[in-house]
Amino acid sequence: MNLKLALISDIHLGIDNDFVLGSSSLAALDTALSHFQELQPDLLVDLGDRITDSNATTDLSNMQAIKARYDSLNSAKTFLRGNHDLVPLEQQEALLGKLGNRSQDINGWHLIFLDTFNQTIEGSLDKAALDWLEHDLASTNLPTIVFSHQPLDGEKLLGNPIFEEAFAAHAHPKGHERARELIEASGKVKLAFNGHCHWSHLVQRRGLNYISLQSLVARTEKGPAGSYAFLQLSDKEMRLELFGLERSSFHLIW
Image 1: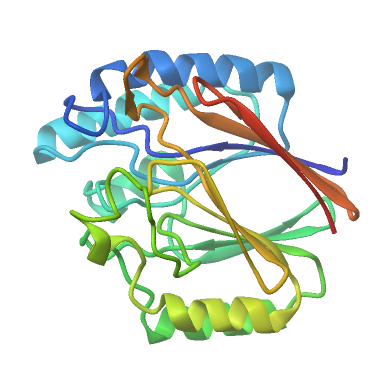
Image 2: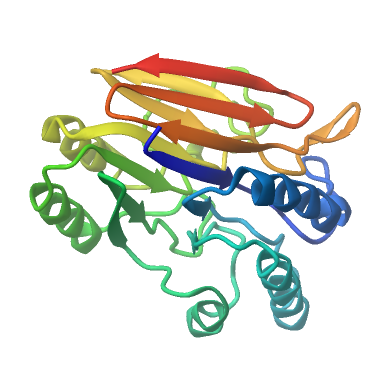
């Protein structure tokens, strides 16, 4: 395998509620990071919603606490904004680095990070973001992975505990239809990863695999889900291992 990625989403440090156990976030994050330290990924990707927003002072303090935990991992890291990450952009970027639309090449792969944050639950990809995506996809000949906080697959989330009914209108970012057209038409994108939906789920469309990752601290009958993932890639296959209470794995051959 020529690329190894650590993946984590929806840490939700903050209060406990019907969907997440935010009081367990730091302990769960410590567990994940300790395992990642053993696995030595080339890059860690945090898909957003590091906190559950409360007020400006608490939100910044919680973001700083998470940054301090991440500093323990001796691997490169990159971050997306989730809809709960309401700390002002300049303060977040001072802690975590660039958070807008961007891409990078690593070990023969092109990684795209789409910023869907617009201070609403579902997020948005405006014309500028979609134009950027189209140009970026045209600029590479490498196999590509797209990361976003909200899902781009456009599928109904039947059976999802949050987004099937109460928040069904807030699952996918505005503009996801055009983003999906660009991604699928490029012929370059192998995988698209997102958080936000608080479940582990695979959707396959036109040869492209859209994968949602469960929240680190999703509320379950047995406590916080403890979910995080480790992705290994080569030019021929993908192996994705999911850890936590809902442990499973995916193996795809291109």
